Length: 504
Image 1 (cartoon, rainbow, N blue to C red):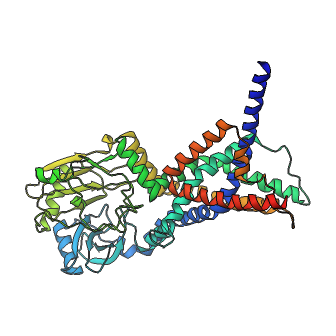
Image 2 (tube, rainbow, N blue to C red):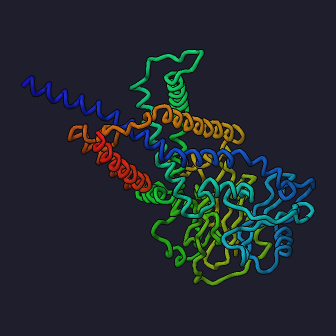
């Protein structure tokens, strides 16, 4: 009996000792094959997050004005903008000047504008048109940061390019947690000596900085991975489905003025899809007034910065109504009376007779102000109101996580912290490649058969192999690009295995 127990204990110990080499090999493959994608995502993200001030300076004429004094009515500002842009453009939103010295944005879609939204910038005191630019997303970024945003999202390659950032986000948390475990279980006692650098000392130094940075940046890396995945295409869809299944969706105001309009979307009354029914970004290029989403508005989807590209305006069977400039002042008056108090607001009108207008707070800085109301454009009666305080914990965390990821939640400190983490990640990847270079086999020496994922997996106990396989399949189904890339790694592994066996 004791021999049986000892044998079982020995097998368990052998399985545990085989798990670390398996993890080490996987960590190596992630660094070698996925590291470049993570590096590019981190570097381009740094460029995006550090340029709000540059963009404000570059487009200062459009964004700011020296005029002071009482503001003209929103109706007057809308008329000036409509006259400037021409009759073919359709007004989709209005953002009144949030503070003295800033301009009002009147946003339009044009027949030849594709999915872009064009903003006419109006001085609220003098009614001078200060310029016209394409704008993007809830944050209203202008052409410079729009280009940087697309560079970060998809390398300017469209939907195909989005796979690179999803691949990086899918593996980043695995590399981070796996690296932590490897560091905790195999810290080398060797010391880094000063003076002449030997190959061994260079290896120790590179390993020290790689692991030290990894541990120091761990929480930030997991944060980048988790929030990045919610933006992604394939994994993001799975996350959205999970949120819908568990009722973790973000509340949205009801915009249906008639029972028939509400019945058009009674599958999820009072809610909007979180981030991504989403194409990464589901609503930045949506050329539709916010209320055209069946019975419920989509004013504040967490990923409105990025989701709009590619969503087409659906056919609208409802009767159309004209938009009068005077309606903007009356709708805002109702919204303010209902408690919409933020300086930064967005009014979205409707051309459908069965839909309400929406007024949404869009101040993503702490403390978050994203309350929204819907208003009947005929009677100017309040129809519905959703407050951020009503959001569930998961919806709030998603809102804060996305805003922190974009560098807007805490302003400049948020930007600097993100840049420090992202650049630290870039340095860590470079040190990882240096480690690989220093550890490379000598010329003429092929890889040993044991240095493969397949070999180390086979060294696990039967239960260990089963557990690893189940976890792997579950992750591959949840994070499809992780699964596909892992298959590629295993194919490379199998080829190396066969060659190494022949050499051995």
